Image (cartoon, rainbow, N blue to C red; front, side, top):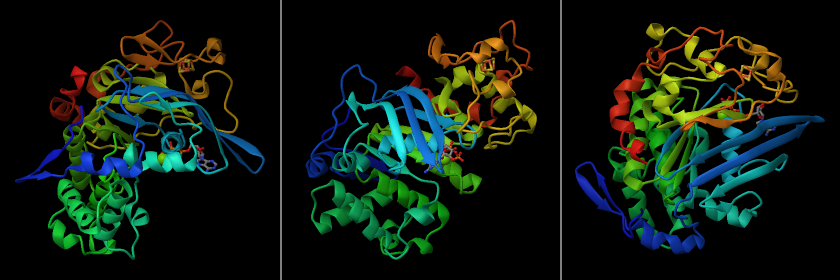
Length: 387
Ligand SMILES: Nc1ncnc2c1ncn2[C@@H]1O[C@H](COP(=O)(O)OP(=O)(O)OP(=O)(O)O)[C@@H](O)[C@H]1O
Ligand code: SF4
Ligand SMILES: [Mg+2]
């Protein structure tokens, strides 16, 4: 899927970066794709923290798969384990975390790798863009130097070669006047420009999986859309897979090909975006969608507040964790519902899904899906559907 030499068409100019051939040896190992295997397999991932004598079950048996080149959104209320599970992929959790289960990249198990191996993995195989570039960028260092440093961490290049590549990366992420910006400090850039710089740094190692954790949340709606379009475009051009973590239902519906809905540290519904929004099965997903009438929902509307409280992650209820808030709950729900592929490509964990006899909650139809979805699907999703 990846060529020996990559040519990026960056607007008017085509930029041949030669990134693959020159950078791979510096880090040594790079996991190779295994034919027929998904790029990423997360299986029964569990993360526990111990704080003040209490055990916090931040991730509780999360499972999903991702194929190369796909854009997947992970959505869920605050505290549902989106960030912790994604940081686990990068080996970026604090020492207080206990991690079990399996995370395989091209079939290679990542849980249990030592710090040296994880450093090779970060940036080169998996990279992450965080919500707050102001905190992620070094305010005392020019942005050019920061990207050059990232390039040199992954490529065996001299200083001049790395600087040239850093400028190419700035051009790739469509930062205006990249040669001039190269010599500027983060505070001289707008929020959107800083986020582009963060993406450039994340791309320095040519990751095969890019995780954007609320990467556009702090930006205004127009800049948010531009950054998302950029991620979609880079994903297509570089063939990388992208996980976008978001509270923003509209954004997920607009740009993602697949959606994983998380609740209480596990996936509760997972499907291609159109399937999910046209055939919601989980009462929780339906509550997320239905809490705001479709006509009132603005593009890029944030996840609405669903009735009831999110669970206490240190004292989860028996059986289905959504039970105390679920209109369909019965005694059967005191048993834990398995997360299964009930319909082709449509996974969910529920004893009484929407559309069945015991379904009592008001129906939410495709028309209630966020307004931006239809407009973007034709461009952002159709090519992914072939996979
Ligand atoms: N270092 C830590 N020590 C103890 N508990 C933690 C730690 N980091 C996260 N948690 C807990 O793990 C749970 C999941 O947190 P996480 O940050 O993954 O949620 P999230 O879904 O990303 O939420 P948000 O949408 O607010 O970013 C929360 O209950 C949180 O308080
Ligand atoms: S398993 Fe039961 S409580 Fe859980 S979402 Fe389904 S119906 Fe509701
Ligand atoms: Mg988070």
